[in-house]
Length: 143
Length: 433
Image (cartoon, rainbow over all chains, first blue to last red; front, side, top):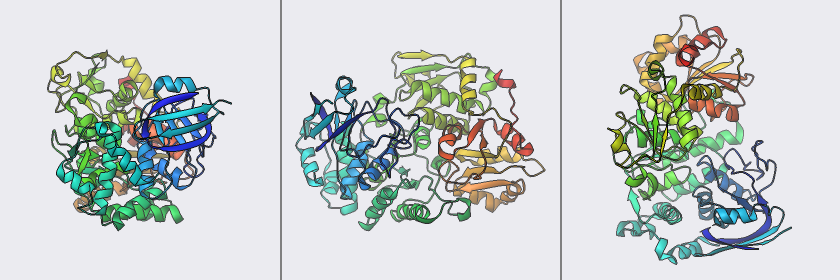
């Protein structure tokens, strides 16, 4: 399956898909040291984000989520790419700062609500995100 | 991909690149030095992501990113310092994770304490004023109506927009200091007229007028508002014209805790709402809401997570306590000291005023512990063994369970004082029934 989206931040990443059943606030919801979902009320509680293609409808919550995104990249436990159902200005800021500090960067793409609905059952499949300046694509091999 | 490639990617899409003035272009090209250049690069890249067509000069900044969340935040601040960074506009600092005036107040040690301290010092070195308060607007930092600013911290943002009529989006970690160094923000969101008009009308005609006169009402209304309207701009009608700045501050802080409220209007009270039609920008509202008394009662009940009478501590001052709030508390202080720890969080400006005027002693004699520079939900201050906290703050009530492990009981200032005097929860239910 292929989904075309809008690039939020350019780059390339591959990994197993992790689809979040509910929106997640990285601040208070992800452990910056282990990269695992740490909000016990979240359906994906305990799942590691590291190396995954993280698919989520939207990011929510505190603007301090940018700081957690930076920690994940510094600690090498960040997702390989983030695929969103709506655009985001908080997580991407953490990625921009990580780049400025010389850490690894990851792509973020916006596949829209419809795109998110098409892959919401895709957990466990393998994904490949390529985001350029104008176009972004997610290729998925379903499990 | 490298930063350079990313910047090429930006310039490769001229249709979404913000138009820059010559001055902004010069900063981006590094003519003012490497720190403003780095900051401008991030501001421009964020402007592109947000779809802003240009940047807007900002008159001041308030920084939330000085609170320690991890070593990356320290590294970024120290990088800006090492590049010679200095803020381009007057800039105040929100709370840190330490009480610098009374270092033993916060129980943290080792690496975390060291890094939290380094982060606070780095922001001072960038030329920010060490105000260390989440209520900078009551510590002399009051932008004027219509002024564009770059503020962080959700309560400060909603206060600046709503009560002062200044214009800011919610600039969180990193973006706040980048705007301060660059002197610019993306011209989008609440900087634009069309996004400031109310689309939701909230009528309060179903609420007991006597309740609307009381401080304890405002955090409840704010909590309801945030959970109901989230990012939409509402105009609230039917509140007393005598609603105080502290009541609006408490309401805004609660609304920005339960939802993503960045701006609200109060008809006849806040600067952009002299009347309903003006607040609505001359258009019809998309939604009209009239909360019932019972609905607000449920919201008030949900601010407490326990019904127990047991009580281990009281905390006031989120947002930080003002001069007027200290006066209200002073008038209620009992002759016998409180039986349980009683914290009041405030900015150092207010703390020093209490010291100079000699009023501090009266509070200390009653057993009030004044926390400056920080607060009880962002730093380990509450007794390690306790489990129930009482507060008059909707924001504390919202964040206490997740950040401290304490259960919380919401009550009025009078309820908090009476309960701390006996060590058992007592609340005046009469206005709510």
